[in-house]
Image 1: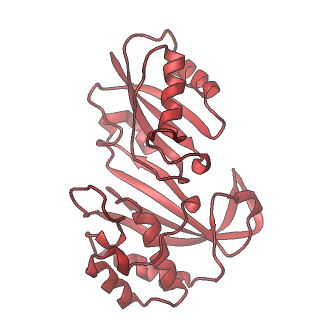
Image 2: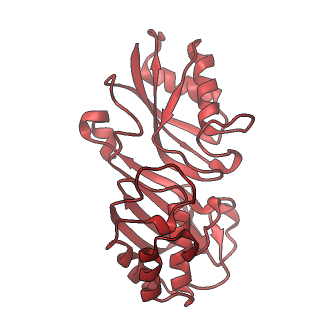
Image 3: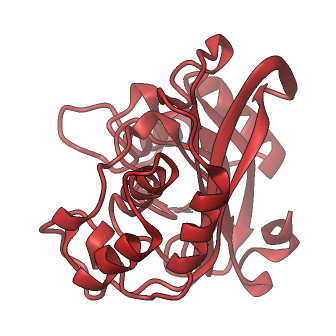
Length: 266
């Protein structure tokens, strides 16, 4: 038996998140069915995280075990797997790893981005959230730096989730105002605000609720001191609204070199 990592991306619009759910379309289920058909054995896939319904991932890893040699090179397996999958899931690479390598537990950092714009972006439908005000990016960046001072993010965690701790170690939190892109091409006269946040781990719904709260700062509804009070209350009801899933992307998952090699630094 050997263990393999899959490097992939997906548009989450048509899926009820990553994790398999009875009777609902998910990325994990779709991937497992395709691999099981291709390899002619039951394949279970473990992902690096559990994105929610409608959330996208431009950088995602998963691992699976296979009982015997499949008779294909890694490149051939990746190519054939893509042909078994719908076009909103893309396989970049499949490669062998140590038997104890784990896509979820070995990850050392994850980066998410949330996209908002006050304009209609016809080439980005389903991949950003439209807002109806112009936020103050300087105030939002000031507020984002305040978040870096804290470790307990209970105020931004979905209620009644089973986690051992709400401690997260943020290493990046910033807003940028950039020209919108469609694929590799920048779209003229279309701009968006992008919130980037990096941490060793995230709580369920954390990024979307943090984004909503920072946008309250950007529109003048919440002060910097008010943000501090929200964090220190450790009460989800005190924070801002949770933003829609469509604007959220998992953009980078990082691993130690010994887990998956130099691909982790790409």
